[in-house]
Image (cartoon, rainbow, N blue to C red; front, side):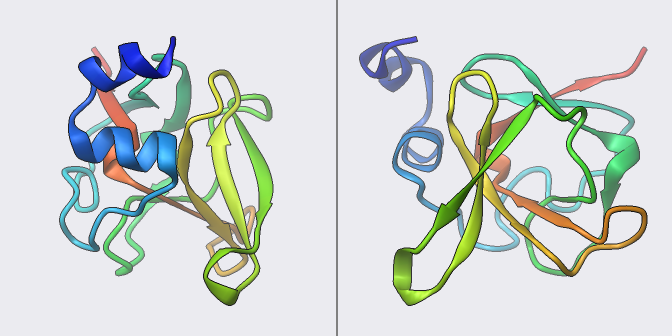
Length: 126
């Protein structure tokens, strides 16, 4: 989808997060304290990204997952912005910015995918 199409489809915050790597304020997103069973999808392209079975409470203010739904659903890039080195997480399909991944998560991966709610939509399991 073209950026101009996304601009009309997404809210201002969703666009800023997914297309300009912005970060929503902590504890403000609709999914940070949300634990229904289902699949989290990319707000831009509808690709499956994360499963609720991999979500955990992290106290960081953003939805946190120990794994993505499969090895192709997300990609990881080096992010040297703001004077620090982090690992950016993007959608494996449309390359939208999702958040970052850190090495302080729980078993089995020991990873914490710290994801902006604004980059996600949720489909509940039947």
